[in-house]
Image 1 (cartoon, rainbow, N blue to C red):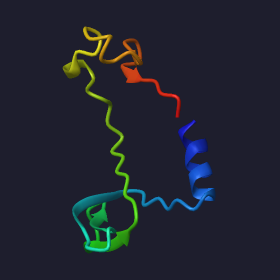
Image 2: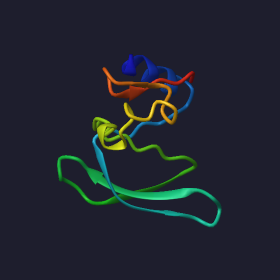
Image 3: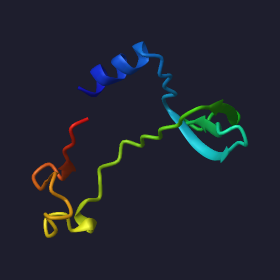
Image 4: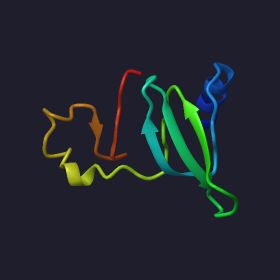
Length: 90
């Protein structure tokens, strides 16, 4: 499913930078974001690019247990205790 979403987003013009490690960033006066990154394998120099929007996905599992989502259903009505994820209508 994630691959299908990625393909859809790329077809819509979203650019993905894979296997990169962010090392810094700053919001510019024009509202854009300048991000510095390096390759995940540790080779190469630090690169920098400017973007309108940045989304960082690290592939980590959510730490929903620390939020006590199961014990607060009124605050977390869309929480699934089996998958430990939240469901949305997006």
